[in-house]
Image (cartoon, rainbow, N blue to C red; front, side, top):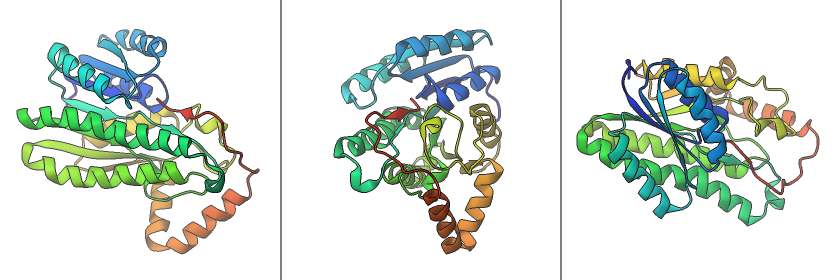
Length: 270
């Protein structure tokens, strides 16, 4: 997608973090209608106000992606009122950092439900419509942890690995329908979620604006996976050619941090 002018985009997880930054960057790129999905309506309205300063129409849509019926209604109505969508950005997600052996199952279920099934549902609803009109681009926001797993992030890494695999499969299935599917792989990013983590202090975090700008650059290329940040490229190189050394380094650096408790509440990026 080389030209954003006049397009319509749907962004999930748009109330804060990477989703918010992507929505604002889309407005700067000339997208006409930006539909914003998250649970927190007040935060969505704040993002919408900022987006409108760039001349785009912003439509906040409050919904929990784990509520399939509500999501179905929201997407169908939004497609009817503001569609068709040219771009879907799946960015909604939550993350817990905790030792696997101390992780309550409800935490794992929350991450799997939002990060994976929520993304699957929105993609299923929008992807079918894009395929029918033979036009559209789908961006699934994974993470560097979708390629290189990290201790204390087992469930989060699992969802991000799954997103990469899902994206690869969907890319081939939707290509005959002229729908492009790409994965965005940012490294550690400076969001409220990351600020609560007790390890990974050795990684220099990206800003959300850098991630959003990296996505825009990647969409103008033919890349099927968009990797953002020099640290991501370096880590992936080591992971490919020196995997054991890479994993040993990650474990050693993770263990050098302070003990990590199981958080009672998710630190979300939605």
